[in-house]
Length: 112
Image 1: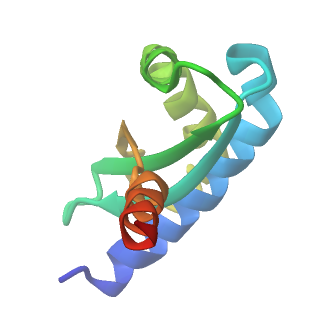
Image 2: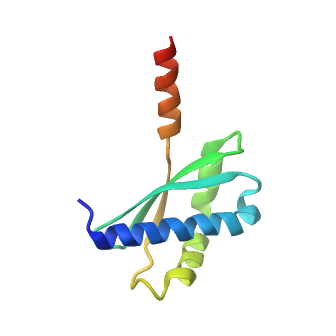
């Protein structure tokens, strides 16, 4: 069960990371459309699992790898934005959110 503080920090991180991808993403990731679908924060607020939906790219795994390569820079941008609100800037871990693929697969199975 997540605490209220974890939920608040998760919402803050989700909002700011999404804005970073919107503003800085073109420089690093081209025309790919990156959506932050969820953020889970550890109880000590030092680790963040960030779930992404990736559109506008043929190879999602390669784009995720590229995002992970720029993880330190993304954390730096995040730190500049939220340094007044949190004591520790969380380490960022990015994961693909496959709920849309799962829902589409279930829909296809139901239509058969």
